[in-house]
Length: 262
Image 1 (tube, helix red, strand yellow):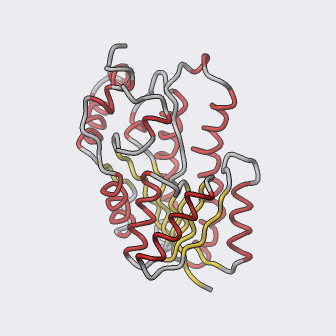
Image 2: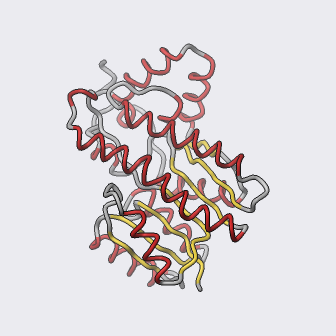
């Protein structure tokens, strides 16, 4: 039996950077994403550059049995997941009632349901072995309500709260849970979320995805329950703690909108 790091949403952005960081450290990988072509390319790159084994599994985690399929695949191959990185997720800038329901449902299924099920299945195995680490990707969006991105902000608040609670529950078990909360980061997120011209990405300095992944790696290795990354994240966290909630949601609306015009 070989021990592995399982990373969801590994075909690009922060997920791919997590794969690189763990490969550099000598960890074998199981990479999960929708695009088989991208996963094949990443597998070749990482195995060529690092002395690691890379398994790939292409699947859409929004489908009802997807997480169970991934879990069963790993069991069939007699692989052991020591570290789970729940990175897969997406957002969309649109008024909730003007958006298509299937998009909103997919967001819930990916950002929340898949993450929770992954954590439950692999977390139980970790607890039995008395060792494991889970990294859940939250966001600066966790600190406030987000008009025009209502479900995305709510999903990241859920991830932060869930991760904090689980971290406390698992103290003394050998299993740690880390919520990684980056600010705006240079990935394809803004393009996929229709936020190319948002003030968040056009007026503020974005973080490098690999730097975010390294920060998450280091925090998990130290057993930290929360890792904030980026100056904007620290500032926004302070604002939302020190001022009425309406200040945070109005600021979020301005930052997320086109050039801050709302």
